[in-house]
Image 1 (cartoon, rainbow, N blue to C red):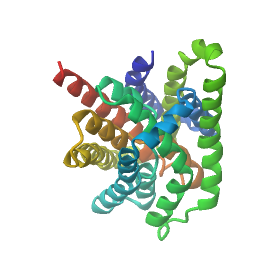
Image 2: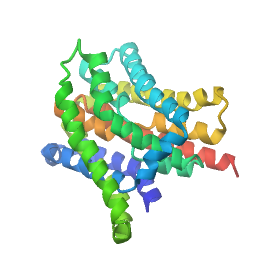
Image 3: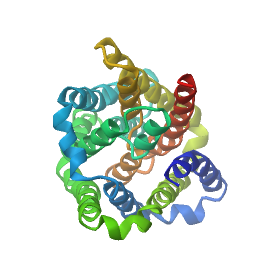
Amino acid sequence: MQIRSVLFLPVGAVLISAVAILYPGWLADCGRAIVPLLGLVMFAMGMTLKPADFKRVLEQPLLVFIGVTLQYIFMPLIAWFLSSVLNLPVLLATGMILVGSCPGGTASNVICFLAKANVALSISLTAVSTLLAVVLTPLITLFYVDQSVAVPVSNMMKNLFFIVVLPVLSGVLINTYLQNRIDKIKSFLPIISVVSIIFIIGVIVAKNSEQLFELGGLLFCAVALHNLFGLIAGYSIPKLMGYDKTVCRTLSIEVGMQNSGLAVVLANQFFSAVAALPGALFSVWHNVAGSMLAALWSKSDN
């Protein structure tokens, strides 16, 4: 069910985006649901983790360091660069940088499985980058956009704790101590997460349906290039360092697939619905690109 859910995400996101553009009214009024829905997604993510996933970091510290460095230095830098080159409006540039400053995406673990990458390493990287996001995401955003837009760092950190860390750790604890009792529930978590993300995308698109007509092409170009550069850097850097293709695939997917749902929520809370557009579009595109890449890599080993 988890694999089908991830593959359903881009299809569902495209469909609800079309509905949101044609009939934006009712979705645009559902903005209050965004934060609790993301909290649910992060809780579901925590339910897939165990303390061993965090301990595994100590076994491969260099790989984790490379992944986190690319995640939090390369991706926001590329977001800023593309926003400058393409001359994006300030709020869209802010949204791009927020996407680049977020941790690995919740779907990356499944894409790694489909691509025959190192799933255990992927899970550890996602877990570590997610916890680091509480501090790094607000500070990196402040570094790149403070002169253009005020960044409420302390409030962002506080909200990240309640939206990300608390739900994830709660999920980890439940998965650790009540594993036998929740196995049936866990099978439904992927589809619940996917439906939640799709709904969040629909709300953001509905709030910005007019701007999408004006800036959709340019924004799509920025998002696609951002994702592409992340995938390339994540593969090529460990390749140059002598790591095998399994590791290279893992870091490529982890770096290229951002937790864009988190970027959407932060942008909508602290900036504007316009700033949430890059995250919404990235949510669609990185799953499409990740699925295509996984299909290519899986066939190359046959």
